[in-house]
Image 1 (tube, rainbow, N blue to C red):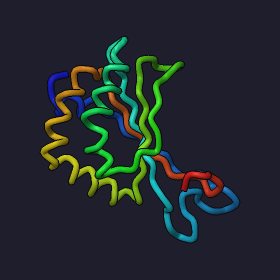
Image 2 (cartoon, rainbow, N blue to C red; image 1 turned 60 degrees about the horizontal axis):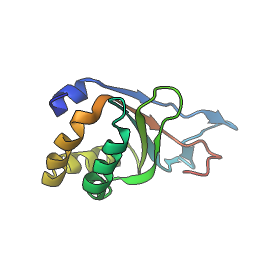
Image 3 (cartoon, helix red, strand yellow; image 1 turned 30 degrees about the vertical axis):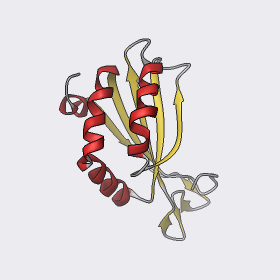
Image 4 (cartoon, one colour; image 1 turned 135 degrees about the vertical axis):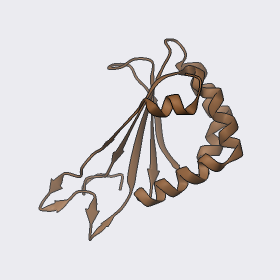
Length: 137
């Protein structure tokens, strides 16, 4: 991949609808969504996940964490291998949209993105709302 436009054409998004638990929407507690989580899965070229994580941690993490709350980061041991999974937290969809717009306009982020594009094969993004009993809300 040679550009953000090519990568974005390969993004697949899926909104995960909150389950009903005890008659109420799981992401809706007293009429308010407590938090929205974005799961971003990056499929890497074989053998490159370690190098990607090094570049991401050293050059990108301080930038993105100005705009999103890192819940966790994992590498895969089953399913689609050579993948890195991030979960980012936002107050709601509007907060996520505003924060991503600010990050996209950040010159540091714009300089960082070309450093990770050579590692990527595919990117997927899912939005998740916590169930009422979830410890993460």
